[in-house]
Length: 241
Image 1 (cartoon, rainbow, N blue to C red):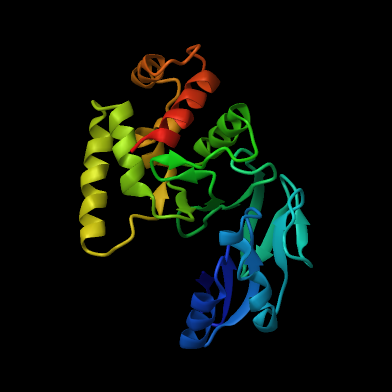
Image 2 (spheres, rainbow, N blue to C red):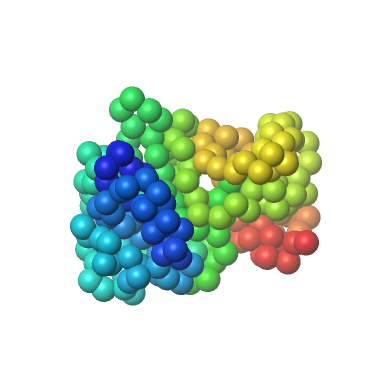
């Protein structure tokens, strides 16, 4: 949720109850809902929130989002609460997944990326291809390093265990792991991350790094190009415990 003290916008409300509680507790009017993709844990609360909604639901044009909603394509813009979001197509996890990027003025930029990019990981390929996911992650990785990565699941520690298997010698990843463990021990989220951090520690953004290529080859990658490496990493992560 983002708010200005009077109005709020929520992103991917899978459950309406915590949104309603926050609105009531802070005396906020719900001015809009941003949706990144169609999975139930991202849209399950949309219809229940409509009686409180004083603005649009925005979502990906190529996915079935609870109607009515404003369909968005790559390059479209959303203006809400005085903020300006640019829509980025990021297929891979789902076929029509989008992200919302807000170029900060006084603060670092904001990225709402749904289940495409996680801290130290990426989403499963339920509908898209490895080539699509690589292109989507490359687009996000090209954003300013200070961009705050607001993904939608606290998978960071599990993702870091996998990242350690891929790049055991990555000192930045080890230091980040220690910071995240300390945060979770205090009951604090590890999120948001940042694009700059993810470039250093996320194996799915590092598919051209020699150590990551070597790890993928050891797992049976049939090539050293980035798509082959990502394909192998994602398959490896799917079975990793």
